Length: 473
Image (cartoon, rainbow, N blue to C red; front, side):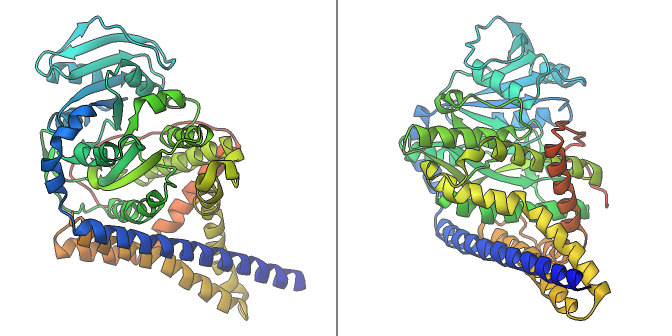
């Protein structure tokens, strides 16, 4: 019994100490994000868009849309890119051996005709079958290739592209008309110091949309999707703003990110042997910057918005979360020599340890905390106090930060202007620790197990379309 007693106290103490560390880290990021958002709130980004539009002519962008079985949403995605307010772009849709009607759908809607085009092989890829050009949109290209995965499709897009910057966009995503202008802002203003930037990702399930433009944004009825909306707000409006402030970002979403083509190619392009290809490219670019001793930055920009489809069922969400966590582990493990290595500056001394301790190992410790609480209540006596303390820490971590992120969004972005929508999100945030949080922790732990077992299946990510009517879980 003494062994059990001391073991319970020891593990309880470790989990309490860990949760305090995480809460302090998040509080710090919350304060940094709040100060940054306050500064941005006082500025009118539209004034910059109009006053500096000429500056963007010197930074043309290739828009890469990898598409595998995206017949449901790819047309709206392309229309949203055609609607972008940006002086000079080309749109490259890469059909990655789709087994549905993605290829035929794009050819029909945009009147694509086959052409002969010389491709410069900057990065080795799977075979390109045929290139098409639109007869109605001169800047729109379709590439049909042998299936090789999303990373390989993006590398094909980089090879085909002709502009010095490229922007990767998922085949089920929709961009606001000024999103590209605003994500390119730090790149244009920095005169080459910023070589990559990521934009804000929002969930648009159930939105009303026409020809790639969202004109009415309402909360869906599906509670699972609403919880993901809250989670995205917490991740993008708090975590990434703070990390970007000190050039510590290791992840910019592959759904909407811009890179200097020169630096991306030199870093080897997107890795085809790692599930999290978007994080891997960012880490490779950071490594290259430090090894070449260059003063370059990778930034997150909260103003531009990319709307994407979120999983609407537990099975699809499970596949997504365990894949994300496995990809994070793979990338961090591959570059483990950067951890606590002064050669890589704050990336090695701060960012890598943070991602190891909080993002990667966090689910294991937190899930252990839930199990500890259950066991402690059965054992009784002194363990009650430890269990109640842990429960309070989970409430602070899970509820307070989620509610703060929702209020930040209402204050700074105002995407959901209706008070009823805000009230629904805040109310649902209070239920997170009882069902949504434990489930995502379990799925992320599955990602760790898959990493250890070196299992690299993509999983079923069936699309229903952004504007589809939502159903309750």
